[in-house]
Length: 149
Image (cartoon, rainbow, N blue to C red; front, side, top):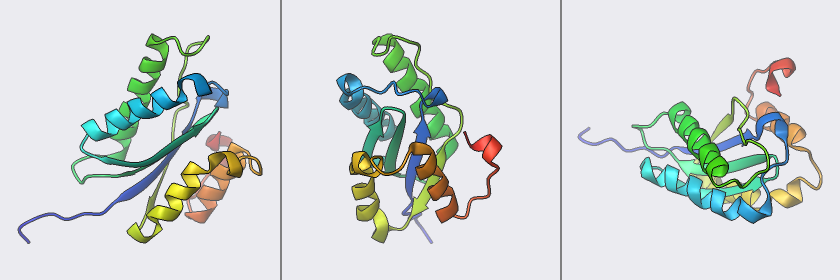
């Protein structure tokens, strides 16, 4: 084949260090816009982003030239630096090590977008820890509880 064609949708989830509730409404939209810029600059396409005080969900399409781990590292490093330089938090902001990256088919994108956009509703019933464990089980990811959180 003469060209490369891909369709890779990734639902990315990661939390604030120690799952501290540091993402407040007063800078949340700015954080989302900043992360959107990072993703676009890396030739990926943001489809949905939303955060709770202690974690964030991002749905994006990944280009074949990019690795998930490199993109996540850039998102975390640059967004934490942005938060700290703008003094959005009283304390030094850091993301927790690690992340969850789950792939979806194109037919599931709208459902995942809706899930991400309705985080407040989901978290009225489930904690972040419960939600994350459900993702790991749903995607048959082997894990050891002592290393998950």
